[in-house]
Length: 255
Length: 307
View (spheres, chains in turn red, blue):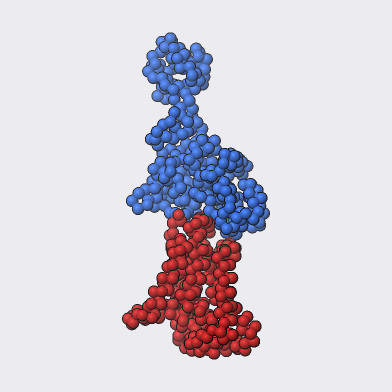
């Protein structure tokens, strides 16, 4: 397993798309934060506002499923799917003498790490650097840091299930375009359910998915019960997705 | 421990309602160079994919290095290398980086094996050139390097000469022979180029429409393909004496059905016929036989025979 993770890290570090995403998102995130810190762009009504963290309002952009979905699925499309389609290198990996479950887990862990870096870590780091650079360091008080740790902890937990879903789509479709398109469609459907559907049963179902929990994670006030529920949904979703992934990979016939 | 590196037992693969492979029994011993012969769509690649675990059999079993447990088969794959169809490469990486990924994947300690393997296949000086800019032959050689990286005991090559120039084909053949001779590497190789396989393989499996038609050693194949006169006379024993004493040849065989296979005097049919008749023998049949590998293969699969 360690060998596989090292191999995946080696591939990720040489993946052009990964570096393009890092560079562009660093620039984009820095620009958004800069605009907000300098009051050139007013963004209000976010959860960060309610937590007295208005300087971090730009972070809310990166927590919208429709937005981070594009980043994650682009990475999956050009890091995972291409191995199955274009180059067919997955064949070499499957016959490397490693168990398919381990191959899936190594891919999942490294892909999730890559997605975490470009979607969560970069916006946070650029935000902290700019806040400190512009003399707003007092924003990062222990209370606010606690809030951010709790919010991002919960968000990351749901995010790990989301990367699992995208990975599954990448493995099933074996096509970069479809890998980008299908998660996007999924997010649009979830968005539509959240905003348009009023059927109580569907609403209830939706509220118990990771998609609803993405926004719940950033609520300034969250009861212990809500927090436990969020953790529970994240963990259960993660377990189901990983088992499903291993099951599928074990049965997959490589072309 | 089993004497066989690979043994399949009634191996079948069905796609929807059609058998891609049906009841295949193949045996490969340690040190064999096994040539897998078949037309396009005969089932060669399916067979190779089943062996390396890319796809799963509908029925039957595969025994590799004496193991037929599916869970253990994954482990023994570490002792194998393979190129299936096209060489699978990371096109945005250099040759060295491609090998490094596979070194890490297989958990091979030390980076020396990368340079050693690149030198072996003649790609040591490719430097920073990405695999996408390689010629087809170079890609094929890089694929071979990946297969050879872990110093395998058994290597599977599916059409490895695709894209290679004549010199490349000779080099590949010599490399395989060398590895087989020096390291006892067992090779399973499929190819359309039958003459190429004929020079390389020590054993052949002929597959057609998903069925293994024949499995034979190169010696047996040579025997079958050797040019000879097929003679049937009323008294085979006397016929043999006449050949020995009048035509002064011992290069013949008397088969169990009384047919004499004469390997000399191929171009002198009239003399043979006259000698036998002059010595009171009745010739019931006399014909010139023997095939090239291509025509033998064509005959076997029921195709058009080319003289």
